[in-house]
Image 1 (spheres, rainbow, N blue to C red):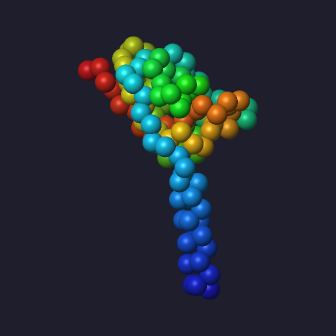
Image 2: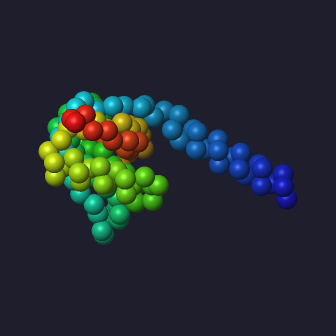
Length: 118
């Protein structure tokens, strides 16, 4: 049984690594938030979606964080703070996978948000 659990765990790890193997890590320019949305019912319930003024070229249609991402609440808090204060931010993320709520292939998954105006 232990061998089966180890094999299964190894398979999951390999699949996770291969899932992001082609993804590129990208960083936006200094930007202001131009659009911020959280979805209640749709193809992306609970997801946060953000558009900014100076996105990375791979992310021109926006950035997202999934509803079940561990850092979702922190990302949303930072985004709301930046939006309401008008402060500039920078978003780091991955250009794959594409957001499940998008009709284009130019969205990026948020890894982190930083304030650039102090």
